Image 1 (cartoon, each protein chain N blue to C red):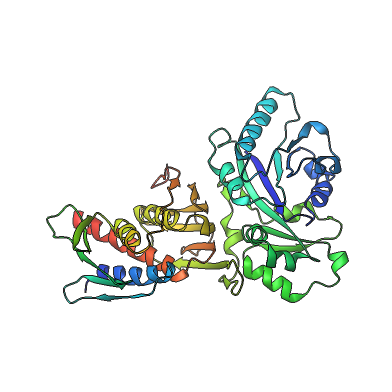
Image 2: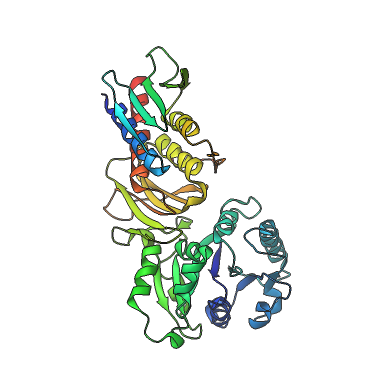
Length: 336
Length: 99
């Protein structure tokens, strides 16, 4: 399975600098890169010094909206050329979005497109945040809030220019995304392992490693007072959840919440599968087919789901899950 | 009020909040749930036991049958939130148990 890392962040937040540094590291020697530039003249690919054959630039528009199909087509073509042996057999793909891109549709493409499904797996989302201008950008640009909210890793850039990072800014980032770790860098220099340590992608389960997500202490944050409120919370259930109830739950979330459900990840104790928990992962209205762990990763067998949403009340999510599970239980009882 | 009706009452109350609608939700003595919002009264009651449906939703003097709480939720929202357009679900086929 080839891992795909999505590198996003607002304009000028240091994505290309970070990417340039990463690609000079031996660990990234077999990495293919897709750079999406928004504008008439692309520069980023010239700023990243690696072998030309492994860089593809998508320049016709913003990756998230105009040329989303191009991403799937490009990935498919890269896989074909890899299989033919006409390009280096890359083991990782980095997709650098334009600074104006909404990362959610890109994640959905990676999760659902049949031409690449089964060969490329989303390994994580890294979002660069400018320590100098980041706070102002969050105030002004909704897309910056979203880029921050969906990240698995937040990389705080330009810390050499900003001086000591204000604790209030870190707190604000954590309020937007309590599950992502925050890494501070200067001049884009970062240990590549820090972006992958914690195993965002678990090769054994072939899914995002929810343990790293769920390790955050009882996440519950609301970014109140902002124009585009993002709230994060975890829902836990001790009793197993019926598989049909979980399906209905995900479908109803998709139907009623759509774009406001920025990300959902969870490990679920399914009544019909007590020894093999299901791992669920959704971005907006698209849910990845659940994967099944071979066993519980710890003695904790509670279902745990982490939500990053734009204004979806926790109480509604909890009431929905409880009601659906109760109804499915009642139907099952009537039939038996 | 049955346990399931209590879940329904709580779900409707939370739904009004989630949809940013002002109103009230209460249980009735006969096991139904009454949603009062925007000058509308919606009554949700368990369907007769011999019916293939599970719920009856009464709104504007019309009774509609619902096969599940998911359908009830969809009907109530459509009634109270005319601007709402359901997102077309795109959920990959869900293996209910490990294969």
